Length: 507
Image 1: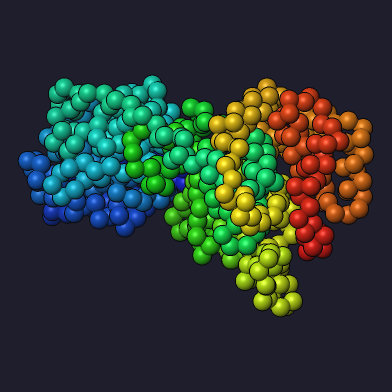
Image 2: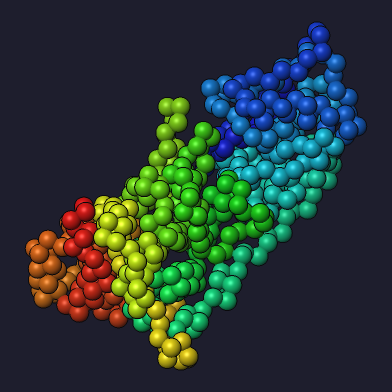
């Protein structure tokens, strides 16, 4: 007898429909799985065998062949276990086939028959809806995540026995209740904790308001990491579409442990030993990297000069295009990567060049340290500021800046940007390309003349010219001005003049 069960393989971030075809015929007892199955899928034979027996069913002592179609699509991971087991039960006459016509099944099986959660519940639910299925059976722990997709009935069940009872006409489990989203307040991080740092705080506000990339340079302990961690709470909350997209990415990557919607903007801070594939995505089985896990959030690279050169150079495409293209086995996989980059670095190997403390680095070491950060990468950053050590008076003073105040100005500036950018691919000033910048930014004659003079001096590239104009547009939005004026351009230039000549030479 032949049975067919629908399940899904996750390729990159996309769910692909897979039909599990199980055929049982007379012959020597065997259990074969074909269809370009990976190691975890081939090992499912032992898990399914034990789960079927321990759930009170009979395992046929016959020749069993399971085909995973389409055969040219690689199948990896344990998510095919439940579909294989149900297909075997249907093919052996222990489960009715009619209930499978409008349902897909996804989950891993334990030896006892327990249905375990697998990565990508939300992505699978979206795939089931697009494929026209009315229902989806998943592990109980993933039901809340899958239920975020409207238009499909999700059944969260605890075991293979419960799956069989449901297919036999038993009462469906209660619909999963939506879990509250993760708190988006930043765990109490507030700008009121920051002492001094007037210019970096201004740069942080501009970065939050326009989605601009930021580089902070300063000696150890000056507050660079402290400032970076306070950026996500300043940004607008995720829209539902953005939250769904972030939840799907984090679910596929296995970093979203809860069943509800991700409510906070991601903040990713990978260690500087990370590889290029770990940063931008890839691997033998392509997975999203840190730039995709930071999608719609913040990617913080501390000790930027210590990152491998290959990893930093791999950032250039994600920063510019907003996505990463990974090609494996003649297939191109697309990973989204719209993030705000915040980087921090020391001015020299010892960290104290230009500060009150004595720097012990020689000219050769300083030159080598500067060369670790390429000009093309730094040219893609919008704001470059120095973070100096606060004075004793500043440390003892009470901060006059709070996150609530800054967040209010940021939300108003973002609202103006959404109205201006309606109907375009961009959602904030930092995402505008050169064409949009020229079409949607109105600058005064004095502002254009000052920007042109800076470009003529050779300190700006054509890309930096557009980035300065985008930052000036954000400053004008914060001040509720429709036209970019001279003071906005001058402030944007002042926030990018950190060692500009050295970078222009390096590029």
